[in-house]
Amino acid sequence: MTVGSPAEVSAEVREGSYGSRVTAVEPGGAGFIPLDERHGRPLQLFWTWMSPNFEFATIFVGVLAAMVFTKSFGAAVATIVLGTALGSATHGILSARGPRMGVPQMVLSRIGFGYRGNILPAGINSLVAGIGWFAVNSVSGALALATLTKLPDLLCLVIVVLAQVVVAFFGHNLVHAFERYAFPVLAVIFLITSVVTLSKGHYSGATPGVVGGVGGFLISVGATFGYAAGWNPYATDYTRYMKPDTSRVATGLWAGLGVFISCTLLEIVGAASATIVTKGGLNPTAAFTSHLPTWLADLTLLAIALGAISANAINIYSGSMSFLALGINLPSHIRRAIVSGVFGVLGFLLAWSGLSDAGEKYENFLLIISYWIGPWLAVYLTDWLLRRGRQVDGFLYDRKHNPLSGVIAMVAGMGLSIWLFSNQSDYVGLVPSHWPAFGDIAFEAGFVIAALVYAVLFRFQPDRNRSEAAVI
Image (cartoon, rainbow, N blue to C red; front, side, top):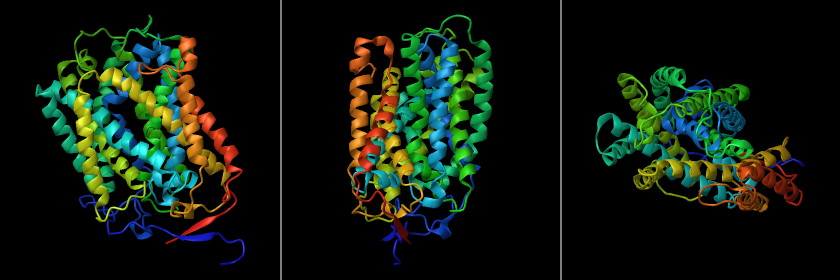
């Protein structure tokens, strides 16, 4: 080693042969993808991120923006565009790093959090993605299928869960392929539904929002950001198989556009549907389709069920990636597939309990997502900025790389922002409890606090000026 050259660390390489086979079970775990296994192109990210957002969970974000957070359709649209743009931009930035680094997103998180400290964000994401989001989307898919077929809710939940677990079990290539073939079906049905819904909306008066004002605006921005940014911890999971010289601009652009276009369109449609009077007593999916012609309502319900499967194939797959990023060594060469199956069972049980009272639980879930993603994202991006120009891939595999700065900054960001600014049905923070119109800026505050704390603590890290290279 020459003077000034980076330290070298042996990389953890994903074992097994996989290539571009769609029907093969993806081998290995969360290791570096060998160069001879690389394939794919940036354009595929467009439908990979469009399809999972063509679902009722996306629509319901818009419903919440109009019916709960704001008191006008125009304000709801503004928050949808702003929040989604922020979450989509960060998703594109994170996705662009995948081809060169060749590892899942939550493995990349080790650079700022350390090998052991990364247990905090990776552990949270494995629960949120593999179980939390899985349950949310399974409920909407099951309710849509039940409304369409008149079958019992529980039976429909079993059908939906089995379909999405199978796709995730096979892994990366089948997930991409499923999203590709689901895309035209979902796009055509939801575009027709969008046109009809937007044509029937009543935009002249106020929507039935219960918060309104600046506070409602901020809560809605947090919720829409939380939904779009909910994909951020998955970003490089779907770009790490691409060749290292793949265009970063194209990779980030197609990934970001896929999230932005799909979320913005369906959330605006959801907000429009909130201005249409529907019968009481209907489940959320039935209420959304009640104003549609019967044939289109049936197709939309089918698309909602298919969209739930599209979303949860990604949620289970990335949840398993996050779990493996904890550094837990499972002996089987199909450890990722096994973890996907376990998450499917746990997610099913949680979804079963959420078949009732889905609306309020979903509202709280959206806000909680932004509470942890904001501080995690702040640490990740701040570390990336402060280490610019240095080789850092060796930190991904260095078990001795265990700075405390990332964990402290994330905990500080989450703790202070929730304590001071959280505003949801289960807990109201110090500021909104005294000034209700202030809204909920926990995600904005959490991001800023975590970024500032990490930037200060980074100055005292022994490895702040060190480079480490991974040896394959």
